[in-house]
Length: 81
Image (cartoon, rainbow, N blue to C red; front, side, top):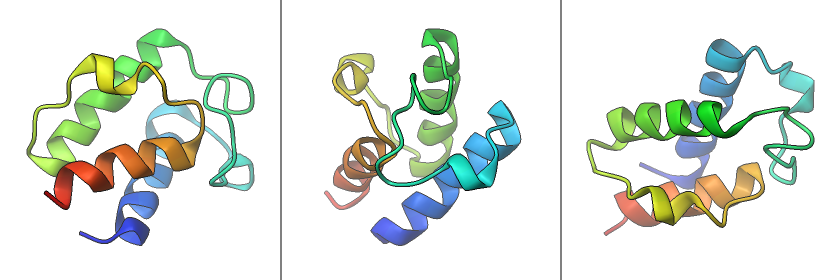
């Protein structure tokens, strides 16, 4: 899976699950401030990303993510191992 594929999947999840307008999604968009996600949304997103990668994602790995690009970096690092 490429970084672009991870980004596309993440964008789709944000649009479909959390009703984020596509025009608001960008690599630099802040998850909580710009996209209006909350901590429960973040947990739901981690679950979807685990389904995507077929890998367990430790919640502490996502404590420091702030932007869409941070999420892409973490997920890509998992699938690139």
